[in-house]
Image (tube, rainbow, N blue to C red):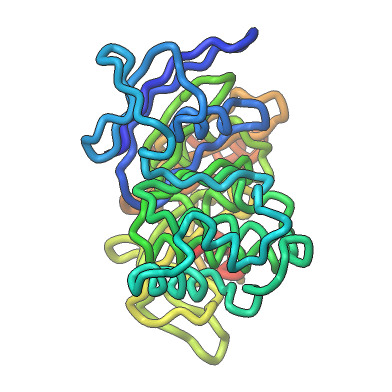
Length: 360
């Protein structure tokens, strides 16, 4: 487990972080710019020292103010890739990757270098200088340099910042493969909901220098503490399932998301029995008191577990339970009153298969 408690006052700012997350998978530090996410990364890495606190990684204490423990940065075995990459401009990609290694590599070091180069798709870039690399390529080199130190924990400060479109999707793919292949816990900073829904397994919400809530993405993403901080157009549900059928005629796939509940989504080259993560935007969900015959491929009977109407924009966010997974729907106050929806009511949930987003 990763256990972190930090308290610090710096200039006019107060920081108070307290969370526990598993030492596996990907944890996202989520919050608006200036919330304190990057400061928390620097505390974890040992770049800055809090006035008091405790930090341990799988039982190894790296900082404890009461016991006067403060393991030096270079001894923590924590890799950190900064937002500005910090590559050596006069060195090639290969030299940047090998910077902390001896001139003559051992067989294990050579094997590790080849592994990192192939994992991050750097083979054709090895002789280039950083100035001849795109933003996404520079970030991959910075991450690779971290991996060469064989870290027990990898910290990424906005690894996808400044990368757009297909390059961003490509870089997210590299980060996903890194997590699957390296078995290193990753903590990354982001304020982008798409990045978090696709990459994160766990989430820590940071606001005004404090950790507000932490837990699994699947449990927290549909909670008010998270979605109330987003504009309505970005409110989504994250659900998981298993591919059980593929329709090659219409390029669709059937995903089991609960006992006897399976939905249709656009096929994206997944195989049968693949575990997938899906998102459904709350604005794309339609509610009905009765079962409808419509063009929407997905129609399920659910139950209402929450109705949140304390917004000033006339939008009501309804939380519905579908098997053991939650789905959010944004509807108007008018629609809520017309349908006479109440807590505990059965309610049909409808959405188009083409509007289901395949995250991974």
